[in-house]
Image (cartoon, rainbow, N blue to C red; front, side, top):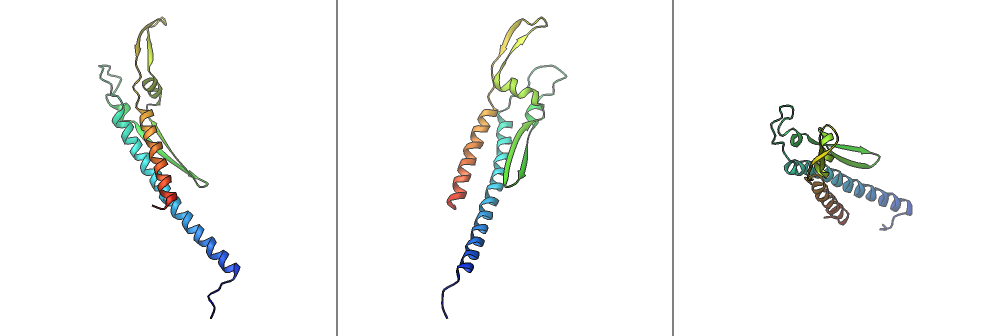
Length: 138
């Protein structure tokens, strides 16, 4: 009995092996991306500022509690979006803004409180490390 196989059998075995390997990597990456999304939400929550004023219309901590994430998977692509339910405040807090009175005159300035950019940078680093580990087989 010979240990040889036909070219057709070899190509089938090779294709199946590649498919299994690709599926394993895809599963690892998808699970890792979702975990990184959760970690990014936790980090941005911990870095988010809390309103300390006495305006009864503004709930203390609502901005901080409003962070969540959404996972979109389609056509072999996975994307995690971290967003806040109080989305109108994100750019004002992250970038800072000026205070104006009713006539449009500037009477103060609010400095930026960088919290989203920091969490985004850490999440990108984690994704890069995840992809490196997944492709190296560790």
